[in-house]
Amino acid sequence: MNLLMRIVDPAFGHPRGILGRLGGRLMVRGNAEQERWAVGSAELKPGERVLVVGHGPGVGLALAADAVGPTGHVLGVDPSDTMRRMAAERCAREIRNGVVELRSGTAEVTGAAAESLDVAISVNNVMLWRLDAGFAEIARVLRPEGRLVLTVHRHVLGREPEELRQAAQAAGFDRVALGLRPRRRNSRAVELTARKAAVEPGSVGSPPPG
Image 1 (cartoon, helix red, strand yellow):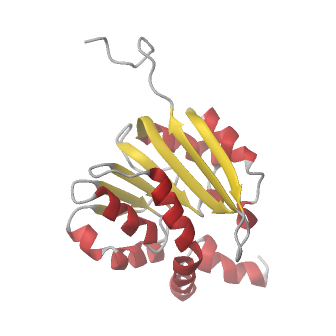
Image 2 (image 1 turned 45 degrees about the horizontal axis):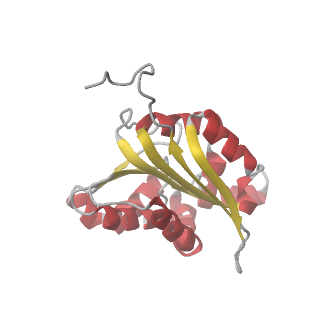
């Protein structure tokens, strides 16, 4: 691992220690616009249950908690102890009120029950996923017609954006929309929205007619 990676990885790749907290502060500023876009595009409603994958310092968690209100629930998963501590500080009131819950986890292993969530959101985290496993896990925990909103800086993605669409479709998402939005002070934002396919009447696993 070269010197640059030794600095960047504990700050942004796998945040930890002092560099992780510094990276978290920079994420608050650098990701704020994407966090707002993601939560706005998710069209969250009071009472909904939301998964935030790789929540970082918790900006998106706070926005999602405000949108779903006191009757909703926001589950944040992040493998970094440093990021979970920063998010817990930012969302202390929401955690006390039972609206926000933080767990150690990743896109591939969320710990959520099958078909228990309405929406999944990810901001600048998908570049760390094992892509097929991550999309499959999110499809597993979302209810039929559940919504997925994902955005990432183009310069950190490390693969062609079209691969995100293909992985989402392979995992059972439909109505997949993929876009690249130019920005003045950063690389383009890769933005994906999708819905988990509905269970067709009469298909395996669908409830019998009433």
